[in-house]
Length: 511
Image (cartoon, helix red, strand yellow):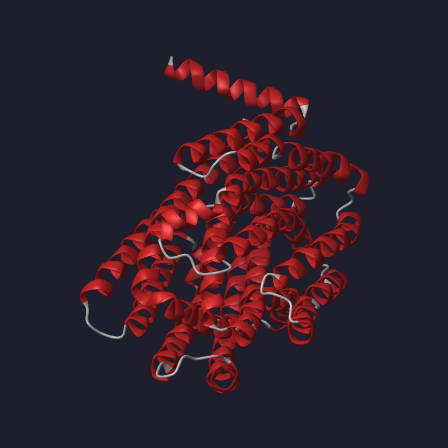
């Protein structure tokens, strides 16, 4: 079997394992969200989301360090030098420990001050909010320390670890729902404490797994000045982009709290939970491809890198569209069935957030590609600066023009479209790829599918009554329309042949 064939087989196997993980976590997440919303109530549910968002804002460095860890560990693994891999891991461990201490300090000073002075807290809930904040700090700090271990699992492409540990994760979260209903104590504090405990157990499990399977993780944190500086500089350049990410996620969440109160945070929290489910369909596929993108560059196999970039971008978009189309059309009915109580603005928030998901599917492969090159300065300055403008633009609209809450998401989508155009112009020349080729292989196919596939479902949706029969009718139409459009307009001749062969093989097996 050729090296490329082995890589393709590994990608397929890892994708299936990650989809198993996704389906498992999705099912439990959707079930527990309904119960937790009913137990906490809309106001406390919104409070939990915004308080956790304050800690996440301070922990924006986590995403930067995670990107640096994945890049350097995967690159060292691709080079095949064990000693360099051990040195890299020891440096990354040291960096994460240092930043975890910085995060705790910032959270207990600046974070606590901001929480007490700017966040809308319901009267009588100050003590509960304080403890939610403390548990959130513990969770975020431990997540930061365990980042190198998760990066090692991804670099080694041992996605089965994520699948198996997810079983433990969802079991513990189901236990949380049960305990919330039987223990007579402040439910908001209990929920935060239980979630923190689950994260402690899960992160320790990941660390234990890595130390049992990967030699490089057996080293102690140690600073090698030259490489330490190189990794910190890399993380520093990605920090601009991750600060922007925190801005248009948790920053917008805090703006919604300041201008509209915790009930609107609850609506956003529910929409984000659905978004995370939809994103999993794409991220599971991308997580299986990302290490191969970096390794292809490390091994100077640029044509293979181009092929993986196009495939990741195009089919990630198709996966999200496949789920998002019926979710957008039937958002009202689905949310009513799922939650019972649907906070105001949830439906419009959900539809707008799913649109931003489609753009995110295209941005991630480009970001992974530029990380593989290690040449981040220009990319991060331009991308980060553009994305950082989302929060001030949203603030101006809310403060001076009294725009409704959904305005912040419209700003996000508009800036994201412009930023993606800038990403392509910066990154494609760096990896020796022509913009014309990307437009032909990725942009044209997804535009054709995006424009044509919704036409029939939307027409039917506009002229039928909302009930369970029409719900299933719309969903079936969405599946048929999206699938056929992707096959005939989104796939190349080679991809169509590949799909035909796989379907024939499957048919012969079950015949």
